[in-house]
Image 1 (cartoon, rainbow, N blue to C red):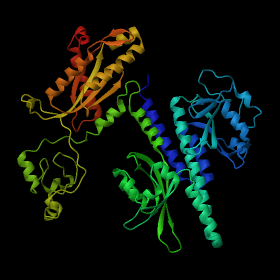
Image 2 (image 1 turned 90 degrees about the horizontal axis):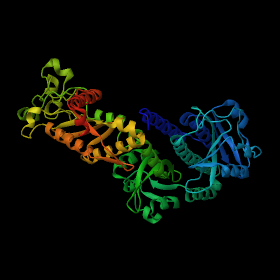
Image 3 (image 1 turned 180 degrees about the vertical axis):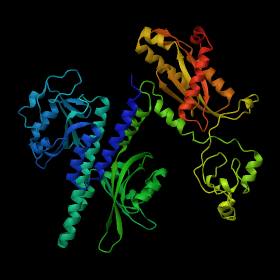
Image 4 (image 1 turned 60 degrees about the vertical axis):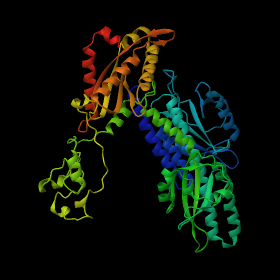
Length: 576
């Protein structure tokens, strides 16, 4: 089972991956990109040595960049490995998804192959997943959308001394996928820059340069477009290559009827316009002919159509849907329990923290107070007087400067000044605990209930039948809890056999009814491998309230749960 700290480790690794992937796109030249790829393996993936082998025009692979060890860099940089040797190496390797692994016990087959490498003698591994210096791990890089080999990343010596597990393998594969895109883009940009230099240096070669650009544009493996810049038709597509047409499922003539804003997801239009104003890079969603949306990376470059002619946008469009899917999967794994699929402790605390603020609620305003505030009077819950002016609070006792006329200058502002209304601020709806006195007639205030659930009898099941049965019980309990709450409620696994339910908009009676329903849902026997087992549940009900910390809210519900648990006998708890 997954340890509690593992999601935090994965989240930290995800942040590192995001940073090194961002660095890939900031390199200006092909050489810088290759070195950035090698450095990213060391800084982001946790290997002590990495090398990038790039396919040359003749098909052989040259060591173009090395990171992590200066001695290895001096020895390996510039070495060339024959293409047939690399093909043999990748063919005999064990497939780890898109990665290729050759154990030190099989590496003797490559002794005379001529594939560049850095080896140091070492004793046999002491445990099964220990990394041996003779082990070889490769990540082949392919041109986007084809099987054409672009290069190979080779790595050595993980810092933890172990063979990468599923998490490490997936992170390496995602990084290699982005590295291949970055290298392809760098090559494409280099070709385009050379074409532009030729245009400036040789006016007589203008037609040849235009043809070179046309081919680079039309036959680029990723989507490209030329669009208008400025004016009412800003972003209107003037020309699109075949790759972009295939990506969006639209013909070139059809695309010329649209601007990029017409194709963008409504939530991404603002981001798109800000980025395309003066060129730059952004990630947005574009619609296809089928009505679906694809995540793409847009890189805009501002170019002139001719001497003193209008400026145009040269837009490079890369499909990053797969990367986004991986990112969402990684983010989900970092915030959810691996066994039950429920939000984990960190995610529970984040959701609860979003509902709380540090200042306690000052009480609900009356109808008269609310009406008085609407016509420019003192805000309910505020503290009029010059002494209170620097620390004005809103109706819910938040420390916002509302400009409600507490001082003479602001009061004299008139109908258009701050004295007639409130200055704009980010409004926070306070979370308060309902009043128990108002529950008798069903008209009590509603609040955010925190139900702390601890399973009764679970430890004996674990001890008697093993963790496999215990895990199955936890999965079924999670399912029953999730089925028993509303769509907007949160069911989280805090750890072990403890669960927490966040249910908003409940009064005290509602929360008690919910606890009873959930306890009754857990009671029925659970069948595991033909055996019926049974657990009970103890619930403690706490209430979230602004002014409390997350830990205080959870501790309050936890304490109430133990009070409820001690109030019943062991037999009663097992019976629900």
